[in-house]
Image (cartoon, rainbow over all chains, first blue to last red; front, top):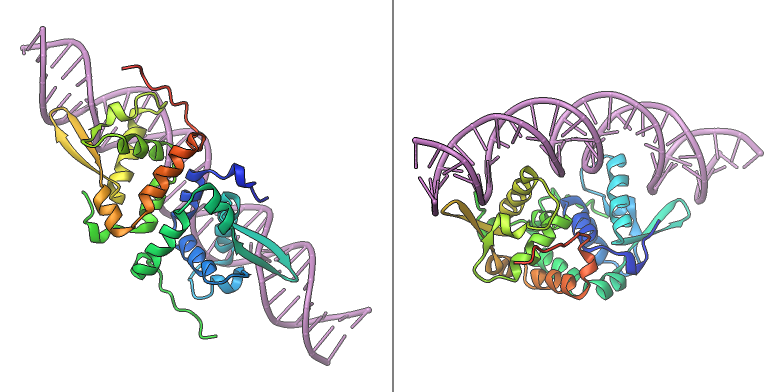
Length: 114
Length: 114
DNA sequence: TCAACTGTTCGGAATTATGGAACTATTGAA
DNA sequence: TTCAATAGTTCCATAATTCCGAACAGTTGA
């Protein structure tokens, strides 16, 4: 399900992050400390449910995030500590780049007004 | 051919680096300041020529490296400055992770004894 | 002139991505 | 309890990528 910290592969992680939608998911997740539900995270991204499910699976299997059932939702959290321990500075560099140049994320980021 | 610095996309770069062979190519390239030929870089990696060509194309189109004809070779160089300017710390974090845990690169790295 | 070398392109087979539809499980309300 | 709504997954078919062998083009050195 979730790979152990020692089993994280850099190529897998980079591959998982090498998709605009998944990259966006990670930046959204990075903004919340206690996680969020899949559905809320992808709100505003124009992606079919089946595809959402696929993207979260890729991120989970790469070890980028953890998913924990919470009622009828899946609480999704970034595996910050594991990533930092294994690939120091990587996540920060990526998040910082996204923050500095938001146009890096080529998405119609119509965030539903909560 | 080669994307301009301002056109580099983080997702594209991460995608390009999210493959064991391409990641290995980049670490090899990082070790040489003045570049190298495709053929020499992939020496020891068990990949068909057509696939090599494909991998270099992906790296080139993502803006990770530059290719410059040099006689009957292609001189390949890492676009360190462009990557650093656009995504500060990213390349260093990746290279450092590869260096720290060489097993990250799941390749039979039989480097031909020069 | 021509064979060897370096790399690209073409064609097909295998893998992966995407989305619609049907499904499971949980919740909250009647 | 019953049932509709919500949150995700799975199945299937289509589209796009990946990988390789083979044929190709350009450069070099004999």
